[in-house]
Length: 331
Image 1 (tube, helix red, strand yellow):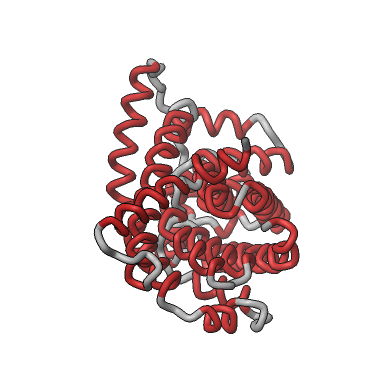
Image 2 (cartoon, rainbow, N blue to C red):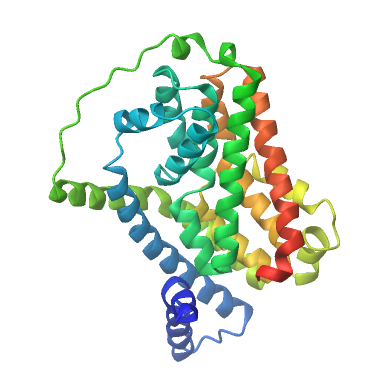
């Protein structure tokens, strides 16, 4: 039963077979480089957009029960590492990219929440969400997905706790530290209102994400069918002990979300890249993208920004090597 769910529902292998049959019926050999690339592109684009739409609907519906004011009240009830754990868990049901999380981080900080708690949220929000869980599960299986989420939450909690222990409150810009977030009353939404809001967010977010998905799937199709496997193995496989570090550093300047990165990750693993290397690249892109760091620089001072980047980078590299060690046991 689980294999059926994994392959036919989450992985949509039936869709891949259907597209292959249609291309063959049109006279295109899917075993060729061109035919294989086209099959990969059509299949992955449709699959990701279908999963994306479903996930956005579910996550947005859940989010409707956790407006910022309610989230602040929930976080305010906890203290110490428990607060960091709750903040990291709440980050899993927030927007998909780091740029979307930064305004929420600023609002929480202005509201007087502990700095370490807000950073646990900031790390968790782009790195670990329901979207990453389902998408990773659809491609790499439930073991990889669950372990990825667990280690991501560990990074978020550990990073936030460390920042709290360093007492870096003076490294937050004054306009945020001295600001006061006003609680605005929230009208109780009806179930119909929540459903309508969720469908609207599906349309808006899918339109926004589609270009990244197309670019990501296109890159994945080229890697999958045109780049020789020995090249990938030499640079990102067992032949390069520094592959994890290289992948994490290369991922940082990019800006994408997990929906655009997953096809690239899928193609790299299929070509022989180590799983830890690919996941390090994935986490670097979605957690420490250059645009999000530029936005964050407006809210915190260089010392705190540098510590935040260092914590995330070290965590990502350690996670990469960890997955390299256990790859044979979980794939």
